[in-house]
Amino acid sequence: MTGAPALVRKPRQSLHSLGVACGLAAGAWLGAAEAPTKLVTAGFSPFLISLGMVAGVFIARWTVPMALKGTGYILQDLRQKPHLIVWAILAGMLWAVANTLTVFAIRNVGLSVAFPLWNTNSLVGLFWGWLLFNELRGSGAKTWWRVLGGSALIVAGACLLAWATSRQAAQAPHGTAALGILAALGAALLWGTMYIPYRKAYISGMNPLSFVTVFTFGELGTVFTLALMFGGGWDHVSADLVRARPVLFWLFLGGFCWVIGDLFQQYAAKYIGISRGIPLSNTNQLWGLAWGVLVFGELRGEGTAVQAMIIAGSLLMIAGAGAISSAEAPESEQSSWDLAAGRECDRYGLSRESIAAGEGEAARPASRRRWWEFAILLAAVAVFVWLGRQAARQPIAIHFSWMAVLIAATLVFLGVCGAMLWKRTRFT
Image (cartoon, rainbow, N blue to C red; front, top):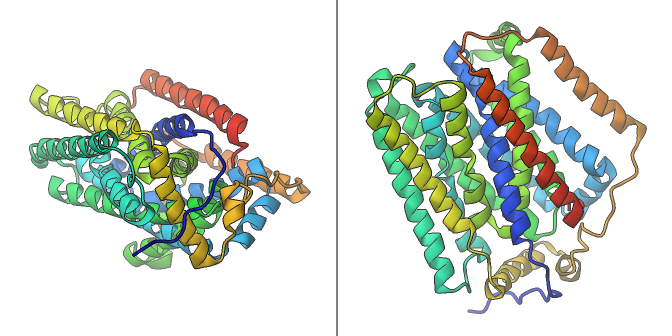
């Protein structure tokens, strides 16, 4: 059976190095975003933690794309591809459930252990990329060996971490380590599946900034529903939010960091595919390990053998992700990607010529700024200022020197990779 004809493209400039840089930047910012979830160990509900983070995400997902491109550009992009609105909302719903599960995982097994376990989502994403979007098809044996070898390293690292975690089950602060492992792996399955809508959007020519603007409705609605269902109803959730006001600033800040990391991750998925971009962005586990160990002292007091297994497991998974993402797609594989893009064009009535030439969204400049866009930006800043004035330090031990080093490193990634994106793509 023959598939849809491939798109006929002009000779293209390789964006592999840009995609790799975006994946690394995503790792740094996604790792920093999970640090505020450590507040679950101070007695706050996992649903409340997730709701606070997603509220910050909602604000950032509206303001960052608007600041970079303008609402006129985003609305035009959505009008051209309205079928992707449903997919973006579905992706947001999957993200919301997965993010809530990560809070439970952190509560039970800690940040430095939970991170690598849920990052097995790269294996799920790799499978969907191969099955649905022709990724790796047409590539040579060397590329396959890098990808399969990297996958094996990721599985081995996850198994080693699970074993190390099971040895500390008696010390799990709020339940068994087994439940924490299951929560982290459940998040991995949902996040890996979430990348299907990502890839559908980007092979159709949608800008990641437009996609995440709609994405946020699915995640906020789902998290709010979960909080109401499992948090005791509206009155109980409202009372919890009032009691949590001293920590909401940190949760909103975590949500903002997540949006920056997720944008870099989505550009990585756009330029090098989900089978490569997602494993690379999963270097956030190294940052999660750094935040957990250096800033929060999670492994303090553990035996040398446990610490060695956790560090070795993390390094194995990072090596696997590096092997996968270093396998640049040859022209033969990119032709297979074009077949998948051609199917999307036929299914949804998109213009093959505009997508092939990059005119679907790259040729359109950022829209002219409106006065009310500046008003929205000021309102978003005002929310953070208001929450910051009410913030209070929580009873969690923090090593401030290491925290300053990690924050500085994430800002360097933002500056360097943001400049690369602007110079080569103008955020398209």
